[in-house]
Length: 169
Image (cartoon, rainbow, N blue to C red; front, side):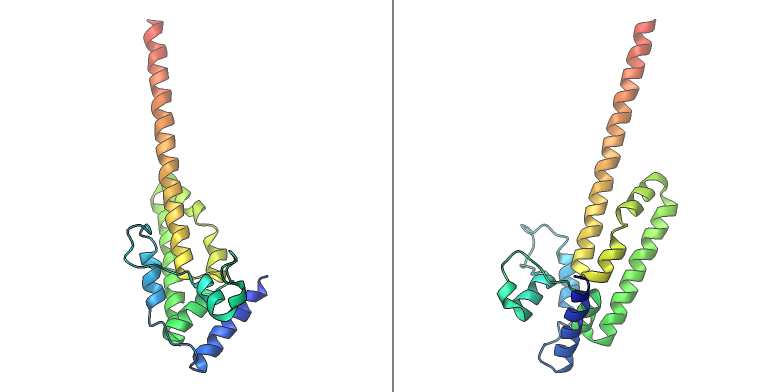
C-alpha cells in the first residue's frame, strides 16, 4: 500500500523528533555506496533500511521476507534531520541530471542507460538510497550485456556476409 510510505516516514520523523531514535549521521548513505561492492568482498554486513525498519518498528514482521515501504525522505531525516532531506533532494536531482546528460551525449548506449533508469522515478519516491544505487548498478549491467550481445551479433553477421561473398567468387 502506497500510504504505508507516508506512515513509515511519519514514524521516523516522530522518533527522531522525540529523540527515541539516534541519528545515523550519514551511515546509511555510506552503506548505499558500500552496497555496490559484492557482499563477499564487503567489510561489513549491510542491513537494508526497509528490513531495519521492520526489525525496529514492526518486529512481528521481521524475518518474514517482507520489507517496509521506506522513503528516501525518511532516510535523509534519520541521518541529518532537515539537512539530510535537502541532501537526498540534491542527490536525486544530481542523479536525474546525470542520466539526462548521458541520454543525449552517448547516442544509442546513452539511450539504453536512460531507458533502464525509467523505474528510478518511482523508486525515488518509495525507497532508500541503497536501493536506488542497486537499481543504477543493475541498469549499467543490463546495458553492458546488451551492448556485448549486439556487438557479438554484428560480428557474426559480418562473418556470415563475408563468407557468402567468398563462396560467390
